[in-house]
Length: 493
Image 1 (spheres, rainbow, N blue to C red):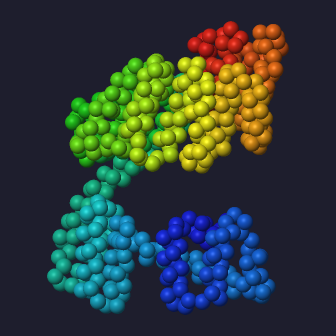
Image 2 (image 1 turned 180 degrees about the horizontal axis):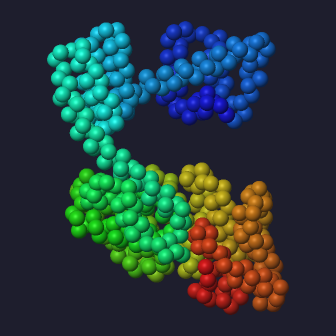
Image 3 (image 1 turned 60 degrees about the vertical axis):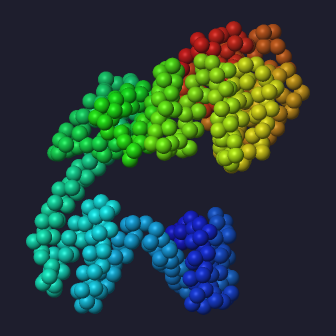
């Protein structure tokens, strides 16, 4: 797909409508080749056939005309997008002022040029765009040669002061880039004699000439965001826990939390809750979940609606390990909170988690009923096929435990047929194995079948990454282990 096709593919309804109105404002005609090409590309998508549309528009004539049409359409789309959005983003508005400055300067209209340059300065200063301010101050100095009322010394001094701020930001960006790079190289700190906090300290000392950055709230906030994202992507929850506890305590002790960065506090608490949960420190995770719950009401419920789900998610995942009844109660509370709010994801979360918790309580039929409610859920309909497969495998496991062998066999065959392509892929061999196993277990007793029992033991005893099992709706090994006399608590990673 070339640039023109990609540009058209990402246009939203407002942009398409605005572009069509703009094109038709000059010459409204159904025979316009640019509109025909635009409509064809938009509708064809990945099935775009250049030869087909070329033949339709130019009857097989010289392709140079077609290429000129494509280039003009591409330029028109870019120009129209800029017109539509220039007032919606601070940066675009700033660039517009600078463009007008250069236009009037080229026409020997220094007073008009000065007006737009001052406007650009105000916008850049307001948005702390120090790089653009450097360019703007340089233009003031140049313009002073044409306008005596401009004192160049004033803007030279302003440029020096701006350069100091700019250098600090550049140093901060260099430190963050280096920290991120080194973190990505050191995938798992837990297996090496490396301290994350020590590495952060050393990197800041190495790349930052200004020691005040270590004591800067804004810089430490940026470090928090960069480091947490890399550790989460690497599934390094051991170091994430250590780092988050240290960062949170420092922000509290330095009194850096306030109304303006209240969301940072809530984000830190969410990360701590999840890291502690991943490290199986459920009680400690719940302690921070309660702190998160208390902070939701801060500043007159400023971010209550946005982070309420994260609070209940924290309760559900931890109580699923410690107290299933309390986990179900948390889901009921969340359902009441969300009543009247049309959000298919929250509904999806409630049904799926109720199903799994009820299954653990051996209320299998009730669990299946909750899982079946997902079929009409909008979020589930749009979910990734791999996730749908894992939900379907969990449903087959539930059907087996319900004792309904006929429904189990029927459902397994349906899942095999529906997800045949995925099940043929190496990444889904575990799902394929469980489905095959369900058929065998459905047709015979595990205790009486030594071959089947050995097959299950081998699967259960094979170590697997925790990230793999975290992706399973019902952990396959934990479910199968008791069937061959192995305690699920004894399973290794």
